Image 1: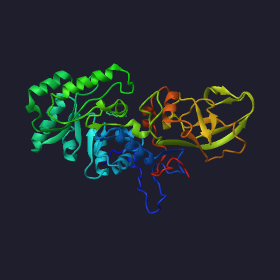
Image 2 (image 1 turned 120 degrees about the horizontal axis):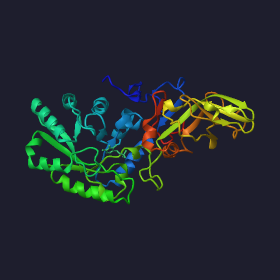
Image 3 (image 1 turned 30 degrees about the vertical axis):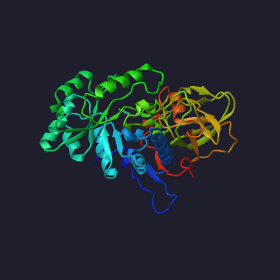
Image 4 (image 1 turned 90 degrees about the vertical axis):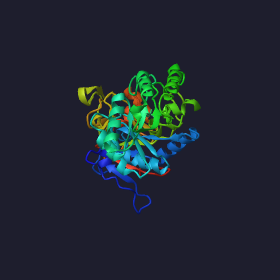
Length: 397
Ligand SMILES: *Cc1c(COP(=O)(O)O)cnc(C)c1O
């Protein structure tokens, strides 16, 4: 495959002879400005936790957008080692990249369905499109006809979100004209919840009722409604298969309540240099802040080009000590106020935490006025990526 996302392209080496060896990807550690650690052990534990909540229902893994920015291949392989068999990506290209990296029994569904012209490569590779419109149904049926075989697909119905899937009128038409699905094996009937992270929102019940009604109009198939937060809405939302993404990666699927998931991600940045400045001296672009007394600063090698949003003004941490940002976030660097640390604590090359024990992905999202999903999927190609798979995965040696 030619199209590869950065994490998938980089030499992703399975850990070798040394039991402590950790798979790495991205920029080599010595050359990188920042380090992203993805704890595959915690990811696996999160998968087991979700599966346990699902009773007998199947737990799929959503690995779209390069595994929410963390690396679709290492993430999907770790999930596969836990018994995960069904994977969801957004784009056909993502499915074509992922399939060869997985062992034989994996099924890869394409949530965004079939763009015109994608039928042949998708059918040839054995990916399973989520058919979202009558046009896509016809195109997939046409591909099956040309190939002289039946082709598997999921069918998505729009239960209220107005984003993707067949609206009720088109579902009714399919029911009236079953020949439209003659050459298609409907392996999954699905829909998606708009408000699953708000358990009290009546939209959840309404969407579930609409899904109940619409699925009976489709050929008998396994059913799926819940994303991460949907898994926590109770047994009525489980159906046959759940499609969690965010919760696997440690994002809180129950906002407002304690996060039931383990943290999976740690983001650390290297100190480039330190300095002392006197009272009144300007700091960073626009002199947006000025020293109010003598202070010590450290500049670290992470910026908005790496996915740390410019408006996410906050702090880094060193061994529990908070190091507030001083001045604006630059493209490639952030200046930290390290006056709280004893002199001579931090040196060039030392790592400070941006996401870690003191500050979660959801905390950083709040700083930026966004959601954890956007924080994770913003991580850029300049990071060194580590994929430990042990109980102490987030500890960097
Ligand atoms: C992204 C997505 C999911 C996963 O959602 P999370 O909130 O990350 O668990 C599931 N289903 C569909 C259709 C999606 O687009």
